[in-house]
Image (cartoon, rainbow over all chains, first blue to last red; front, side):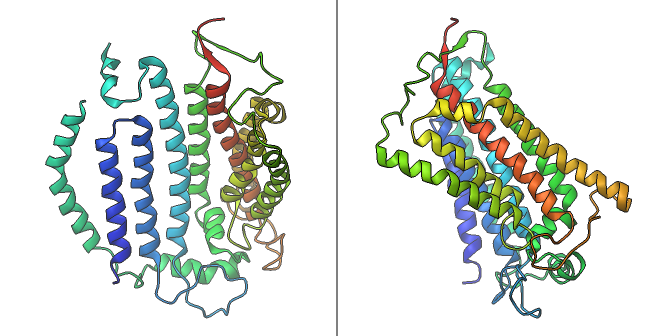
Length: 114
Length: 252
């Protein structure tokens, strides 16, 4: 089952995307986007894993230990920060959209054209 | 765009997406058999060259320190964006009449919840500070610890005292934390330029591996990031809470 993490990642990606597409509430749209993004964490961490390897913390393990790839873990950290900031910005937009249009249904945002 | 149209578009694009996903997944290394050399070299070289024991932090604040600078300013820019989007509009006013009664959802918090949140505040501060300063030794660092630090003051909201939180952490102070943290990181990099002639180069003594003050500039970078993240997250949260609790529709 060496491909299982990637299958889960693809599933998360598609489910999140479906949430974005089918959403009738902008808050749900934003949260679905975070589900899409969490699939990228799984891909990154899955890619960097080495069988039988330990976390890349070398404080109290023998110097010859097999370690997982630390680069992808750094990328996941960046990813998490980006997700937090993007979510905050989008939710701020939702707050303002709700003030302007009195609704958080994306279908009601057509008045944007005015 | 109506929901119907969106669903139709998705049905149309779905098969294409499935093909691209399958092709992409096919090219990934088998789980557990990654052969990237960059990570192997980082694992082998960072401990002897930089005396850090957490390689993830070592990458973050040393090898990829310049990327982290960009990440810092993404955070800074987006928090500024949130503050700008949630500013007080012309047809709004701030309703602070009920300062003392703390009229919000948690106002009727039970005594047990209030005591618990009081206990939580110092605990969150201690854990956050620990995670920030031990970044180069154990899992953690400025980003992770900063979020924990920001969670401390938020416990005051749980205790039903949002205005006390505003008094303890006013917007100007949070903005200052955010800017000082971001500026400090850039200035530490400038130290590298001055003392080691490369921007963000590690220019401090490396110390003994495993000690609190080791790995050169990494603890400083971590501290700068921790300060920025604390300010940034608290500012974002209070901007949203202001919208829910203080800002009212209609000019005064």
